[in-house]
Amino acid sequence: MNKPVFNGERLLDRLKRLGEKGALHGGGVCRLALTDADKAGRDLLVRWMKELGLEVSIDKIGNIWGIREGIEDGPPVMIGSHIDSVATGGLYDGVLGVMAGLEVVAALNDADLRTQKPLAVGAFTNEEGARFAPDMLGSGVHQGALDLDECLATVGIDGTVLGEELERIGYAGNVSVKNLTPAAFLEYHVEQGPVLEQEGIQIGAVTGVQGISWTEYTVTGQSNHAGTTPMAMRHDAGVVAARIACEARAIADEFGPPQVSTVGTFELNPNLVNVVPLEAKLTVDLRNTDNDKLIAAETRLAEAAARFARDEGCKVEARTLARFDPVEFDDALVSRIEQAARDLGHSVRRMPSGAGHDAQMFAPNCPTAMVFVPSAGGLSHNIAEHTEPDDLTAGGRILLNVALELLGE
Picture 1 (cartoon, rainbow, N blue to C red):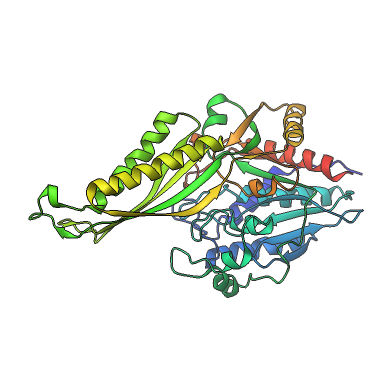
Picture 2: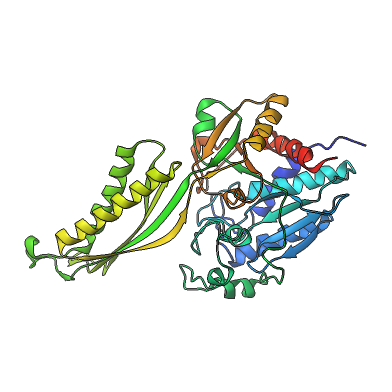
């Protein structure tokens, strides 16, 4: 029996070929969930799974599963992530975890190695939340954190309905969303931040995911003439929204790391140069590893928004788009990743994830951990996203070694 070997060149080839589905000029991809580009990516993934001898199934939220049988029946060790992207995504975000899962299967096949436990490779629907809110939707439904029917009825940013789009692209599966209970869950991902690169460290053993709070604020004022309406008599929705945006930044500055805040969308109506805005909408993304501090940030921003609206004679409404508590990963599994990195001669550090991941949905229900590799320049959600091939292979070798420990040879 040969020892399984993780093939970095084969991984790179799959990453590049999948990157052709929804490719953008100048690099990167636009593969929003359940679009035609996502369908093309899914079709290619399913084809590769079948070529590797996996038993493929699709559940009712569109998650894709490929199962490699074990000597024993029972819960599989699962490797998974997502293949959908943001509108200006890179070639590695999410996709790396799925393609590396396929490469683990290929390595086992090449070595003609049977494992005690089954191995599952999963690709989860709408992890990004870029077209349909919230993010981590497919994995959230699978793990019972989100309701299937409510998610199928979700209306996207383009007015489409998630369930109808699943039907349209042929990925409305008939398998129960509770079809698999994993023995353990591993996710391999690019860091999407600058820490590993700046510190010259090759591997991140991820300890957990910080809490995430997405809120949409809608401010309603009074539309009026920009030249004839005195400043003291205005009810300017745009001013209130701008003050909310500035307050979000002030909260992050005053709370300090690891608190972060982002105003990602900002819309004015009627959006004319010479008209006082009638309405303004903005989204605020707050994140912190400490749930009490995240709640404090949410409370302060909500109170400030109400105060700013009163000052301007406007109304403000807040709508929660997503809310996830901070998550801690299994310490023993994190330690296995650390040890595997050291055994292979790679530098490693423990670190939290600043971004949300499918793994956080599994953490409450089974041993879960993640492997990070550096992102050049800290860039992600950007067509220039890049990770060096040697780093991709290093992380893949660690993923394979830890998976083998869990699977049992």
